[in-house]
Every structure is written in C-alpha cells, then in structure tokens.
Length: 215
Image (cartoon, rainbow, N blue to C red):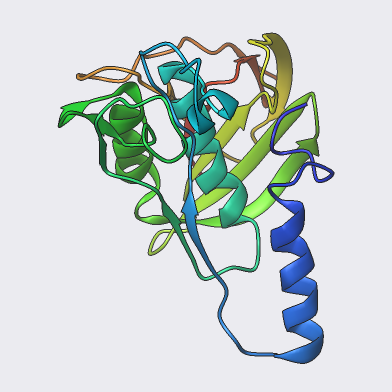
C-alpha cells in the first residue's frame, strides 16, 4: 500500500484538515511542512534509540515518493508544500537522511525534483483524469498562459516496483514527447509511446511518466 492511498496516514490528515478548515475557518491557508523520506546508504543502527528507526527507503524510492507527493498535493486544497530537507550527512536516523543532496552531492531525488520543476513550473493542475489507488493515477496540467499546452503525468501509486500498461485518452491533444522521471544528471529518459485512436498506450511505473500535448 502506497502513501497515495487515502487510508494511509499521509494524505488523510491533510484531507481531514481541509474539511475542518472549510467548515470552521474558511479562507485560511493550509501549508504542508517538513514532509519527506529518509534515504541512507548506511546500515541501520543496532543499539540505542536509533535502532528503533524503520523509515529508510532507497534513493530511487525517495525520488519517486517526493515527486509523487508534490503531484498529489497539487490536487488538494492546500496553498504550499515544503519537503524536508536540502542536504543531509547520510545518517541512518529520523530526519537525518532526507536531503535532496548527500554531503552536498545530488541524490537521485535532486534530479527528479528539478525535472518536476522544469516540466510543470509554468503549468497548473486542470483535472484528475484517473485516481485508482494501487493501480493508476493520471493528472492533467495546463499551461498558465496557453491553455492549448498540456502535460499528462501518469504513474503507478504503489511501492513494490509495480509495472503495468494503460490506455490514456489524449482528448484533443497531439502527443509531442514523453519523458520518464530522471534519477541522474542530464536529459530525462525519452519514452516512445504508441498512440492509437486518440489514446496513448503507456508503460505505468512508480517513476512518473510525463506526456506533453498540444491542441
């Protein structure tokens, strides 16, 4: 079960707060602060309080979860979301390995989040085209000044390296290019996506796939 599932203690406290705000404090902003995942290359501690730490994920999973968190938050009625932290010292303990960099050297998450910013910085969420926990999420973003430019972001909302295929309708848009979320410096991996009868046949993975469309 991944964090996108509404029953998991990640999204649910936010949606509960949104409901409370809408009923009791209309107009107040909601900020999400200090979310993230620790990714350390060192073995877990075996003694002391640090031995109780169970939060470690791989560098790849940290990158996937951070990007997908920002995507999920974009569909919620919140005003800001901040991840924690920029740099860490690779310590296997709570909040001590959650940086985008490790000893100021970029982790995969650094490149993944930078790609997210470059790809969607000028875009805003238009609609949630699919939201199927454990199976498929598809979000549509529209350019802030040119509504004919769109980006679909497709991913598997899971945590067990699941891969699948899905037919994603493109509407009136023509597919210009497709890229998989990168984990390293350089150009994001280009993906060949067949299009038939106005739908893209895409490989659905836990690393989001970006589809650029032009109407």
